Length: 268
Image (cartoon, rainbow, N blue to C red):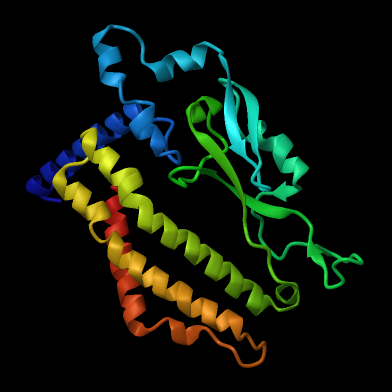
């Protein structure tokens, strides 16, 4: 490596470190709860000028009790007592047990037969935690105080068809469709949930903003088209003749390679 390259590398490392410090100082608890960018840390600079500790620091040492509004899978709204310092997973565990919800796992869910469901029904439905307004994904391993003022939504994921339990190809096709739908929804909301708040607090310059969020609309359109095509295949599924390979053209893989190149730069 020549001297000029070394200087450039040091400069990039220093810039990444500076951005990292900004993120860790202001966004330390918001990896999967982007509304906190707007709501929880809006006054952090004012608090620093007053000479007091930031709210996020004080929460680690002072235990408080408050109520969190949770929308259960049956659409009923529950007010649940919460204590700062506890994890979101512990807050929702009673509701998860009530509705027999389970975390994601690999392989088809076990089935049980009953008079009402002779073809079998899945034992344990998968779920996801979302903010009710923005539908941002919530990390269940963070402090419950991150949810104060928000409404938590427990949403059940689709269950595999009984035929999928007997047909591994159909099972994977259903998984692919659901994963693609989640990806498409995340792409559609990424700029609003992440891009604009990060730009407002000065974590990203114009170049970084365009690099990360500028091409997401193209990806979202491709993802939406893939969802529609997968749905058509599943509606007419034949275990002997249905294939999915034709949905992924050469152009699709070229775009995927371009995405991977951009993604590596985005991670920096």
